[in-house]
Image 1 (spheres, one colour):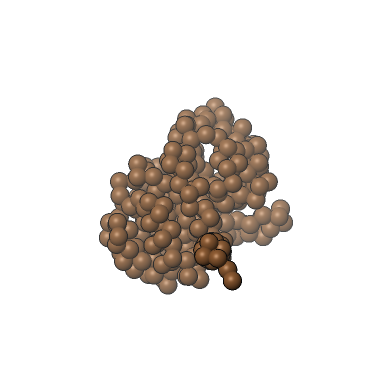
Image 2 (spheres, one colour; image 1 turned 60 degrees about the horizontal axis):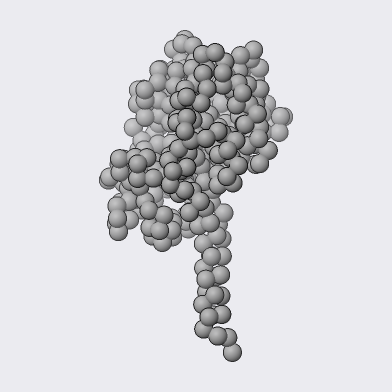
Length: 296
């Protein structure tokens, strides 16, 4: 006859197996604080499956495109090319590294063909004499569009997807992702998301009280989640969260609440992909990804 202690232990093991039965993934944004550590250090933690380099702020309208990595390196003097070795180190660990286009403070009225060609030649599998991040080939492009025009983002995604065959010959896939706000539909990229061109969508369930979690109340988030997963033809949908209470004005979910309340409510979704965190700097301070990784 089994002792009470052994039965309790068995229950805990079964619970852990159940929580880990779906291997959800963690996405992190890196690049907006010089105190968050290097890109290779972020990947070395083993906590992340996707790292998004943030951001390409200036692009389109005939302007000279410019990346902004907030103190990590100086793009004006080609000082960010050294990140190539970090990118390759991450990719060698199986981590996908993408570049995020930021559309709120950046200049982003676009000619989709012009921008797609630039991204292909300078960050993906094309050729350029002045690749801002060096020779490393990124795994895709992320759309974090939070202002400006809502036009042409679908055209840009379509053109980027057109490079799939050329990337496949190099043994890579072009991942197209987006980070919309949780109110549905998203005001800036909502139309583009209906095209079915986006592989993954990480929805920002923060700074938006009508569709985010509040202590003890999951219904707003859960209802918004259901609308997104039934309306957007992406392969996977991710729950986007701040990595600490300091990372956003509202919407932070303590890890205990995420594990006990939120994840059990959404992980059964066929499109559930995991959790996106903003950002690496705040995750360094809070250790949030470490506390949730086994449950995502």
